[in-house]
Image 1: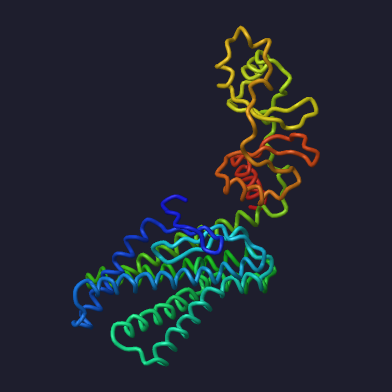
Image 2: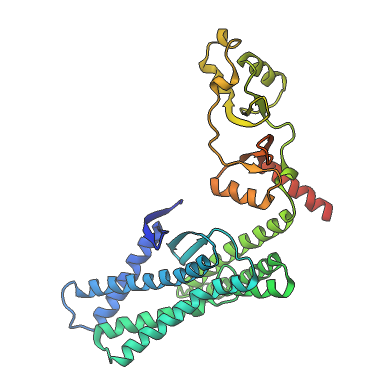
Length: 372
């Protein structure tokens, strides 16, 4: 993952931290080190620094527990959790897919805040019940209220926050359309983002106060991510009901493995196309490999007549999709594998052609024009 570092696995889930997380860890540690040193002057040596670091790590552990709450509920619904990442604004559990029903989506969304509220109750109970005071009491107090704040902040009803996902599930339940839920919750998230930016800019412009700079960052975060969610939902709704066969590229770059390299070279030139890579089929039309134009350059042209395409072809390195498969599933596979094309086959293995991102975008444009 770009800009992140894998630090291990948690319950079988890959765990990453963003590079910016280390900067935040240092700032939070310094902040609580200063606070503890000022509140408890008797702490000597490096003890305030150690306690500040412990406090910072406990706070991030709380964020991690919040994301594990989402993850465990998703796993119980049969949804694979691809990763958990800690970054500047908190954490993110990346799920394989959406829940199947609005009720399931609701429970995945609310699980994180419930974990944070539970931690707030447990830590508060320990502090009050055991009458913990001094530096340890101060740390427990901070930990309790950070968990409460984490829950309340995430319950703000706008994407990409948990409250936005809860709102999405509610709108989905009312309308029966999950995409309308995403779009509505995204618009709310953008509205809240603009409010956060305004509350950050006004004091900054009028009074020169940087105290609201955090509001600017939160507002920017909400605007960026809520906007992406809305666009994604709109695209998904347009792809609904379409199959891979609807977007297969006409005259896809396909060549028989039985023809000679000379025939392959001549066909490529005469076809007047810019394909540099071709899928290779056997005499039954089934996909058996791939070959690039550059591959034949390693063979002397004097041998092009005696050698065949199948002699130089390479194994297929990408997944294949079936022509009757959902186009939305294929788009998700393209994104996961970071590919621009995928081979398309029928149920019997016969090659149909290729699926291109460009062809999918063209199809979406045609549908948009048709509905305009």
